[in-house]
Length: 356
Image (cartoon, rainbow, N blue to C red; front, side, top):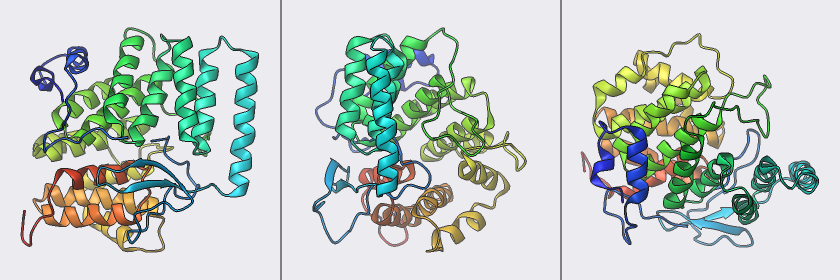
């Protein structure tokens, strides 16, 4: 639980982060927060879902259980298809060879961890990052990537600590582009060490229900976002945090920079939703996608959560709850829309008809 002082939006971001890390650990979370529990990077475009959760079963069967959700459900890891597994295995072996050839290169440890994560071998990915940190404790990217892994595995306190450590290590330094593990269609990397750190740290606080802290962190991320993709990624979750706070006028102001003709390489769905919120067409955009069973589970989750937040902004919390529940029953547990829905459900009791 964060100290009261760290919640103030008037405090500089660095003070917020330092105070947050200085607070004593809480053994239990208040009702508005999530207790830390025991993710991998999100699956790449075109990959099958990490988990196809069967609501009739509480067991993973022969699949590995990576973690337990905040709703008490097992998060099961399904194997990759053979062609995908072979490709990722070859890339892992190359990364391991690079590490042997250059053991003093901290970036080589990052790539080994990332390649394990693409294979859904999450405990080995975590161990690879941790070994790198033991040998290179001042290398910020190791903390940033391990933090994302911990985030998706629902280990929020540890993820927050890693992101905060990364932010201290890169303070005052020139930002650096993060190379893509699987490049986008244009072959143009859009994210950086600093934007990804602030983005994921903001998301971690959002998932805990610390929406004001999330707002502060995400606004810090916007200060270093240099392209429309990262502006869209950070702004959407900033918009959501403000909606969750009930700050609807402030949420609408976040939408102002966005328009249809922006050049977007990776965050096209986020961009479409931001423009739809701005133009008042969120229902028309999201509802048909959510209802279309031919659309991917990924699209239905992303736009489903977008529709849930639209309903929440309208004051219809019961409808938002139903949409969150649909995502958790049928979505992919390693995607942000899924675990945002999961977190929202875990913080709230099921509403009754016509309201709470």
